[in-house]
Image 1 (spheres, one colour):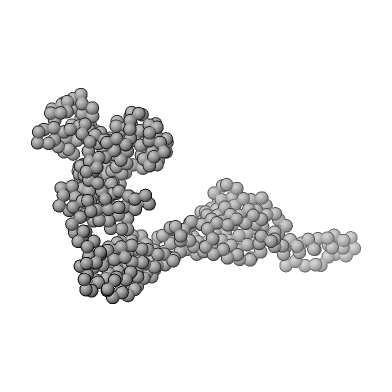
Image 2 (cartoon, rainbow, N blue to C red; image 1 turned 30 degrees about the vertical axis):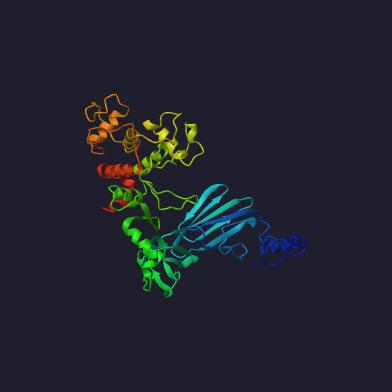
Length: 438
């Protein structure tokens, strides 16, 4: 507590000078920006927060040295340019289903990390501090939507103002716990379905299901879509089920295509917005660029580990620049030529050699006795004979392999799933999805 008692005579003048300045130092003044200066100097404080997903953020507040609390709501970033020197506390509120950690940097040095939604620290004159609040979903579950018939459109509203839209059947993984309500879009000439609600608990699953019964049901687009789902393969990609209407379930390659898409090694064609069109193109040739991407996915290789420009200038500035550059860095034989056209069809021998190289499969010495059109001097002969020995490939009825023939997407899907069966331990990155289907 500050007192104004002073000693008499000589100390009187000194007391008169000290007391007002001490009072000012204790009480402080507030600037137009909302910062409080105490006479001990000021610092710069920046607070940032990252939500568990786009559009989701927590709330936070700042307790200042003068014990005034500033509520910042869900602000993503804010800078206090003239923060008073002194003690501060930041208190965050986590979004539903999330946990919060906070990091503090002062003068570009990491000072403190707390796995809590609150942090306290001190600032001195001239300090430049940055606080990073990070929210991560840790309490989650799964949610699925099924209808009879399939193809019903819906909207789900949940905690943190989340909104999901889609077409049944659909599954959502790792969604935060809380109350969810589903609204099905009305169907012409049918009774409008009522909204349904359920509460998702940590580690649990909720399923919204609905059966539509009305006249002329078989004429509805949803009913026709369900018939297509039985005639053609339907694959869950992300949270959405996609029917590929150019892959009939009776085709010899249908199971391989399903597996290649389901594991994420291959995908169907996409429109300009990146949305799958429901076309796979089984008879389309596979280009060198596409092969590079598929080989990375099969082996679980991250092409972004060491980003460099492709040596092949034709690959620069393209969607496949990173995977092509990675294939070059790793010395994959089909990517040694710097003048090769990355978008030309890959040959069967190039495909075999690239997959073996990506999986680090040891090669055997070629003898030229496996296939009538593959001699010991044929390019990639060692890869071809290794693949034949491992039963990754086989010749045709005439005993030929066709090393220079292009390979189509259906044939590649078959080779990929066979490789997963033969070299299982080499494909650990993608085996989670694959083993779940066997």
